[in-house]
Image (cartoon, rainbow, N blue to C red; front, side):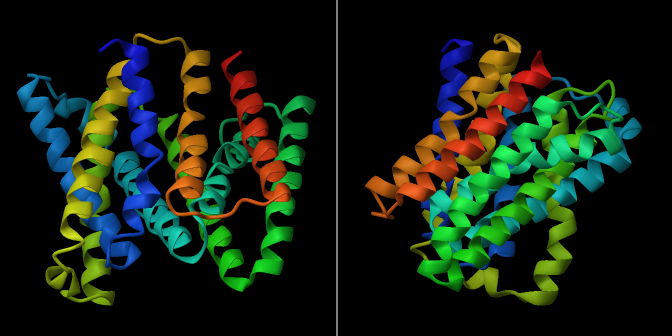
Length: 285
């Protein structure tokens, strides 16, 4: 399988996450915990199988950032899964793709990057898109607004992961992912035990296949396919292919779950994804 096909496959897998999460009878924090644990174990086994050497020295040198970014990954999942519970997959996904906008806004303060006029216009474009989606959902009810809010929170934490990863040095992307998944699992475990208790052990048998697929396929295998494809692709190609994920998620929500997408939501989605794409293109350039 060539690099482009591996990347496309990973994006298509990511695009079906919401469909599986909606069928798991656990809280969002419990789903995030099990995903991190199963995904981390899957990636560790994959590194052993493919005889991939892990640099423990590089991990040690970046330990604090990896721990905090791992915690942010866990919180990012929790809020995204909460978004799926309160609103449609398309609304939660479009809200989640606000992450590049948050990165653009925070980059001048965190990375000392200049906020150009073109990037500022991208931010305004995304905000107009979000207003289009929220305007429709005020009519549909408060539940959708809560779901969109959770999606934006998830986007905020994902943006923090992107920014923290900029400061990691001398460490491979697979190593980063493995440690972040383990860190997310360890940091989420006390919270889940305190808030949810041992309810995770009494999960319904109907949810178990979805949990295993989410951990093994959507996390372990998809991340492995994604990261193994990066070296064989140009940066702009990666940026373009990344939009297969949200588009496929929206198609899945409409075709399989019969979730309706209004005209204003389509306009809002185009504006948000378009602004993210242009901003990503400018960054790559």
